[in-house]
Image (cartoon, rainbow, N blue to C red; front, side):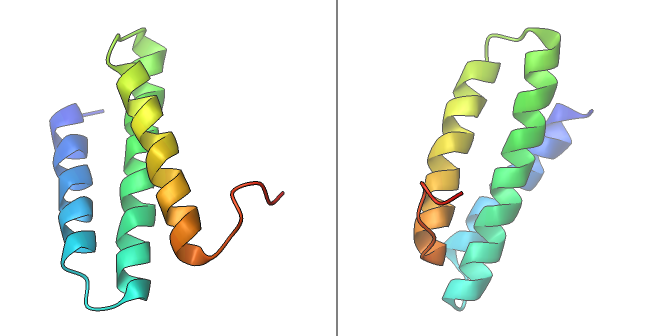
Length: 77
């Protein structure tokens, strides 16, 4: 995995969410960013990288925001 490409893709997705024309586009961009963060976290965990903890925490926080934006309950199974 090329982490620089993944970091850049993550930033682009977040920036797209910031300038989204509507809530659906914003939600789609946040979902994309969350998926990228998950891949980065998984990769870093696999390497035993110390930074993996920060990405895991960021992914959880972003997932909560994405869930809140969709009207879904974070406790829904």
